[in-house]
Length: 424
Image 1 (cartoon, one colour):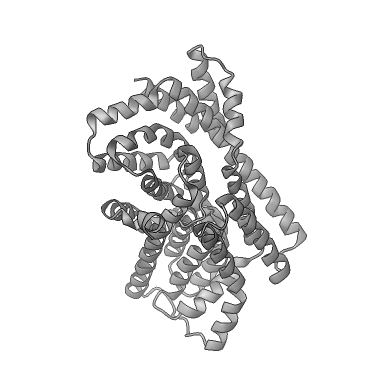
Image 2 (cartoon, rainbow, N blue to C red):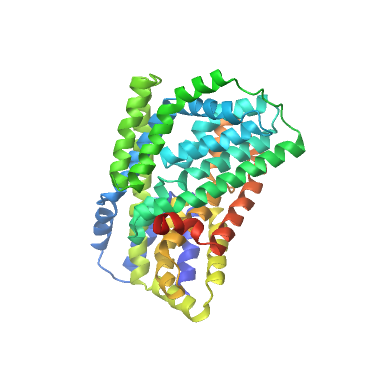
């Protein structure tokens, strides 16, 4: 009963508009006080939540993605991909998803992916006759690939919370990421072909393809260096973030010369704001997690599941339903930090691989990024397109269905996620 009451209080606090970090930390402190527990736990939790070498990768990846965003890397990337597939039915939509997938392999950020590619793709696709709601939904969903295809900031946080290998989580995200990107591409081609709501693009000449690809080659190299470096064990995820930032700075300042000093300052300030927000949420969630652990809520939930749920499928269905509902009110990292500590003890009893569960969980919080009313990517695309939110929301539902079908596919064929990290 206490677990239900605590959850209700938390939801009420969030609905009042209180910042998520303050809601989590405040409720955690209140629970400690009500039980006459020593508040020394609070500063200990605050310190331990950010005193983590692996977590250092998050602000570095955020900084790298903002540097690339300010440097206009998305335009070169989109133009290069478009020269190869733009003449296909729905070719610009295909180019958008491929560009999102490649940029996702660099940035680790859904918002940066949606914003970077959206700035270029949205006006181009609408000019070519694509229906606005389809364009907005495509970009919002394509941006979510940024937290599935490695590197991924939510996967870094998941690894920190569960103490699982960040490298294994990254590698496990490749197969599902490519699967979802492929599903989005197939849907785009079918949609364009049968709706006819687009103007075909002329096939690019080989000269145009070579020039556009040459211009975007440094971006491709950056993505390859990060993924292969992590996969081959050349550097850790944290080192990969630092190397990626240095290469992004080199790319935008020396190679492309597409970024100014003011742009760099803006990127640093925006990264600082995002990082502070992220760390405050993590710290608040840590205090909340400590409090509910002392109240034995995770243990009680685990025991409740063990006594009443002995089927993995039922457990996964319940988790997915809860995450879908929470996605209407919470953003991705908050869901991760609230739910994972509670669910983690139950995984071993049900024989669920934590790496596989991490991938499934990330796909479900991807849905939260594009579900109203607080889906962050919805607001990013609305701002980029200067459109109304209803039009953006109208376009995302087919992609949410595809993500949910992706979870079903990963459940039925676990090797979609586990083959690369453990069998390749």
